[in-house]
Image 1: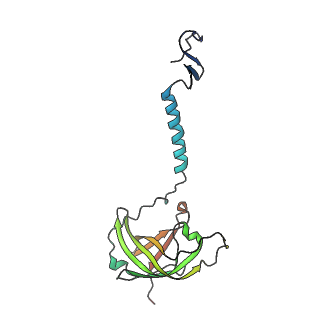
Image 2 (image 1 turned 180 degrees about the horizontal axis):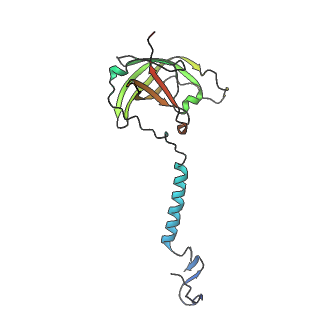
Length: 198
């Protein structure tokens, strides 16, 4: 309650004195005059901060999958390629051969491309099916062509690495595998298509 009466005069009796937004209650100076108003202000500030932080999250930052659930292991097994010269062979026994496969997410920007052998598995969750590919033995490391400017602080390429490929179908109902790379807001997709027969 404001200590001013309608005449604008401050009563001299009692222990609460108000001037504008400030009120003296005993030995405590209260801004705004009420706790509900203070909580409302704090909540408003919190909402502005949360809105600012989530504004940076683009449509792809929290990608949850394609929703595809009908691919089989036999359908996914075989050779896959990318226009950048990447080749991956997913064998039916769960082993894999990788040639010049780039890193996913922000690791792509480090510029390395890995070759070697590993394992793979087709899994399914609420968002859809994914291929989990793991490099267990690295045989070669190359750089993107053209090579990015040398960065002396770039980390050493990993000796083992794991990828998560989303499984989807193209307009002809054929499978495609892809992962996202770089800044999540950019929506960059590293797409692997069925290897062409030679």
